[in-house]
Length: 233
View (cartoon, rainbow, N blue to C red):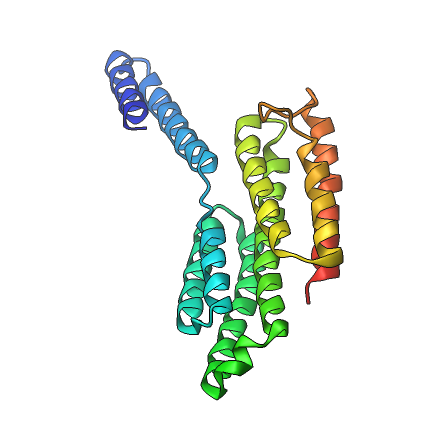
């Protein structure tokens, strides 16, 4: 990354030196700056963080083992991760993620309250365990949906950027599906399988024309939205 930035900065500098009389130096420098921004954004998208799932797993394991303080700490860490993962989203997308975060915070309060009452209240509460798993899955599906939105936005004009968002969306959907049970799991697994059909083994979009891929993404977005409405409160 440093090499790329150094090259661009040097390119802008030498262009400025050679084009003072024509006034093109400003234009070239601005173009170099724009290219630099694109490179940074593209790299960030290729490396979208996915730490929340790791913390979710640790939180759930700690909860199952009766380590409630540890579970709460990991849920708080997962909340921080979700906010980091949603930094690339627009205002509306961040608001949706925050709604999922609010549910996780409420569950933290329930775990803390139940622990203070009696340990058995928490340890034997299958309902609370299911609520925790569902809250994790909802958060992951919400982020997946918003990554899908951005992939669809860029698929025609910036396929590399679209590919980064799409790959991250699939990862989030896989994380969510692994935590679910029953109909919610079956429905999520079906959406995930259909979404994977939009890319080939190398991760490239199957259809050559972006517009067609975008249309297919619209369909999947509708299905994820329907899933969230059906399986979340």
